[in-house]
Length: 390
Ligand code: NAD
Ligand code: MG
Image (cartoon, rainbow, N blue to C red):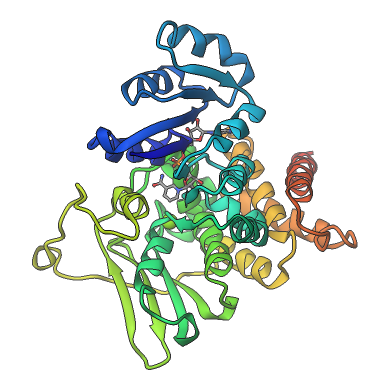
């Protein structure tokens, strides 16, 4: 029996992970499940999978969770310290699928106890790549990518030498607005940005796909995880989302990873690694698909990509600034306080203001400095947005 925990169990990645685990329940001993406000889902999954403990991120929902699990024998807890305690419980495999920088500290705790960390939470690598990798190295824990592009690159690199890699190309669907006239983008609504052409995902990453902030995070994630230089990382718009990434080698070969747009592939790969097991995903019928298309990403449409390049070059804590400002700007877009194109302007302005304050971005990277920087970036994003509104 393998002991597994799922951080962010009630979300899109969490539910897909549960879908896989629940197919062979005898193989898994579920330790901890964590969630947010969806207490009903968290409690029902905790019962179904017979978890040891269920944790909600929100301290004020503890009574609701306790009521929902009354008499089940499943322990309950709430709040950010409880999330870390849950992630620290001995387990063989932990899924990191909380959304946002909030996933960083629990993921680090799971690595510290030596669990294999299946990392869907890309923000961990964006905010604190060096710290995450160093934590894994110190404890001997394995870090496996779950983002579809990074799982694809990882798979294309099996048996290869990273020194023979010339470039890594991650594909982008282009999101909800890839075919919109540029002039219409500033009027894009929340509902329009919340629908993805190919993937069913949580709302935040879906909007980030429309703005390509998601791809921006993934460029940084690629640099951090695979340790190659920013100039070797490219992105290309591929509207069918069937090729997830390509790795180019120095002999001119390009190894492409092709598969259906279903996160259960990448999750299942990380769950079964280093084996491959049968997974319940669609088998592609290439003759029916007929053709795959590609186009260069348009920097005018997707300013987030340029910002990601700045962050990759800058290094230090600039990833934490970028992500914190982006999360706050996204909150404001979701609350309909700013427009779609304002998000990139706000992030750009926060990066500029940080750069003007000597030493902030170059402070040593620890969990504390990353979380402080994240907090400061959010506060600064609020200030920028207030000034723009006033
Ligand atoms: P989601 O919004 O569907 O779920 C997020 C989960 O995190 C929920 O369980 C929620 O309760 C929990 N959560 C939210 N805020 C929290 C907080 N402050 N503290 C603790 N828990 C909190 O998100 P998702 O789409 O499943 O994405 C999860 C992560 O995986 C993100 O980092 C995303 O970028 C990444 N990812 C997702 C997909 C996808 O297909 N959905 C693909 C690749 C990568
Ligand atoms: Mg992805």
